[in-house]
Amino acid sequence: MTHALQPAHPDITEEMWSKITTVIADNKGKPGSIITVLRECQDIVGYLPVQLMDFISAGMNLPSSEVFGVASFYALFSMQPKGRHLIKLCMGTACYVKGIKESLVRIKNRYQLEEGSTSEDRRFSLEAVRCLGACGLAPVMVVDADTHGAISSDTVLDVLDRYE
Image 1 (cartoon, helix red, strand yellow):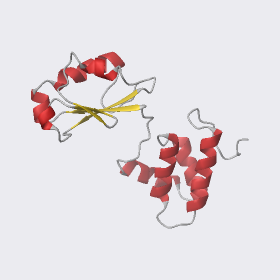
Image 2 (cartoon, rainbow, N blue to C red):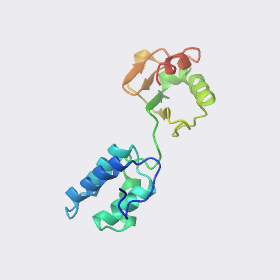
Image 3 (cartoon, rainbow, N blue to C red):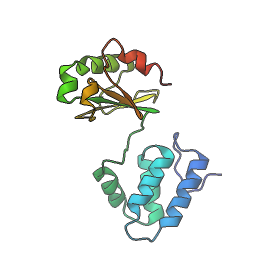
Image 4 (cartoon, rainbow, N blue to C red):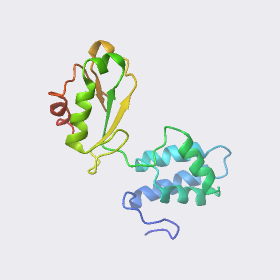
C-alpha cells in the first residue's frame, strides 16, 4: 500500500519505498546525515529522481534546496538514470593517438549515446574519461569492472555485445 507522501514514480517499487523510508527513519535528526541518506537511497533506486529528493527532504525535515544542493554538488550522486553497464572510454593521449575516438563514434552511432548519457533501454551509460591508468593496453575501454585493451573501432561493438 502506497504511503500518502510517496509520489508515484515508474522506477521506484513499493519494496524500494519501504527501504527508503527505513533509511530516512534511521537517519532523521542525525546532524550531517544527508549524504548518507542520499547515497543509500541512490544505491536502492540507482539514481536520485526529483520525486525521491523531495520525499527525502520532507522525511528528513530539511529544505529541498539543501537536499538538491548536496546532490548536485557531489559527483557521486546522479539525478539521471544509469545503464545496467557503465562504459568508460579512455581519452588520454596514448588511447587517443591509437584511435579510441573512432570507437567512441561507433558506440555513439550504434546505441544513440552521447558522452554522459544513458541509452534509452538503460543497457549502457557512456563516459569519456581522461585516463584509466592502463596506457600499456591502449586504447582502453572499461565496462563495469572489466578492462578491455587494444580496442579498435572494428572490435568495440563485438565486446559490447557480450553485455546484456
